[in-house]
Image (cartoon, rainbow, N blue to C red; front, side, top):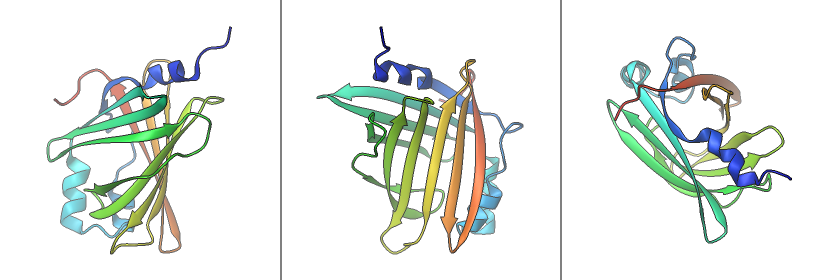
Length: 167
């Protein structure tokens, strides 16, 4: 009997903490995005916890992502395409980059990866980034971001472990 696609998202549940020793520094991607030196250094030093909460409402699948830091907390709920296609974009303000954005999610059941596509909106046009999230068997979450801006691409890979997380 086939596994319902939504149940494949269960691996993403849980609050995780950023593993700084296994993650890339965020400084290069923030620099590429034009974030000033002081803010880059502050953001690079932050402790981060990250939580993904999949849910279904009225036959639609949603991903709620929560970020907890020692600086700012964020919660964003976005419809997720379970058919491999992106759904409607959700608009929000990206605190780290300091730009207004729109973001869409899709889930690929064949490799169990959760993909996002983000574009800047408003007065800071031209930023696009792709996010690829996947979970290892032990619950470790990988979040790979590729920023495309001003004709250049920068990749950042962060690793989040289940366990001790910020509240």
